[in-house]
Length: 156
Image (tube, rainbow, N blue to C red; front, top):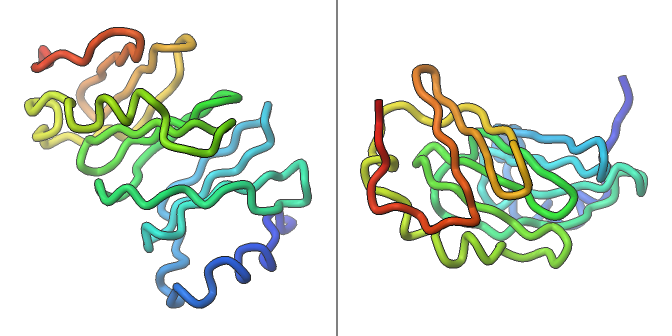
């Protein structure tokens, strides 16, 4: 086992903001193509991406979204897709290091019957450039980011 992230980069950017228990990792995702490792911690201010092709240096501190605790993630070369325990979905633009346009337009438009579901999304995989499959213990959903978000989802 070896250390893959620069503890110095982490320490210099966060040490004044965190307590020991804030450092607990709650979700992680690694993209082998881009060599980016995303880590989210118990403290939501500590969501960050490290570039493992550059000795684990800090790539980006993700903005705090205040929509819950991240549960699962997936990414391609330009987008990071994150689901939260509130069933909110946030997409980040990895190239420009900002909130993706889809999230800006749709974060508050997600269907109420999807957000209030008891089952939380526990996994996500990208199917195509714009389609993602999300699943819980009992159900799954397909989200196409190229079409308008419906006001209600069909739950079978």
